[in-house]
Image (tube, rainbow, N blue to C red; front, side, top):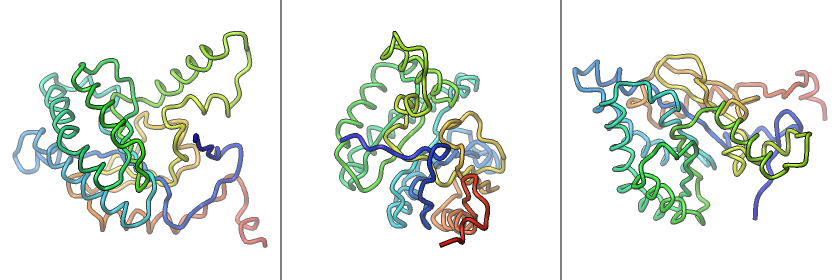
Length: 250
């Protein structure tokens, strides 16, 4: 059964004390390695290790959805040798980790334009999603070759293909074709590594998400860092266009 989720610009969603959905830009892998006089890929390898820890921490804290920005549509601009190693690491991670995710009741979803990936990587993605499709403990979404503008455009094109005779599109109709139509909008966005921008990540979905930036590099981000981010979120007043006075009215 397809679940319907509230749009924060159309209706007032719940504001749970523990974020139901956390989205993270995992930044700082290369700088972490450079500080240790190691090749950049060593930082990405360590970053994969950190993903395991953060997944476990989210499950323990009752987070239902975790979305990780692994590779943006703009990351193809990086040095070719680094891109090649990232693709190899993606393949290796899928080969080693999908079975563990399934054993622990975690559903895997990959969003992004998969057409640029080779056949082996696409097959691993499809097989991993199929294997874990029935799991409910946590939905782990990995954004790979993903961009927020691409997501909106592909949704528009998908809607037009489904409604060739219609000339009017609504927010609700378009939202059904976005890559993450299966998930609620993120409650909390985290970016590690000190940069303070969202870098074309989930542009539609982050409309009313609470933003949290930390100087901690991704390979150093652990459960304690996650708790700090959640604590910051819990201090926020989530008004969704209302006034503070309206929030305290019975």
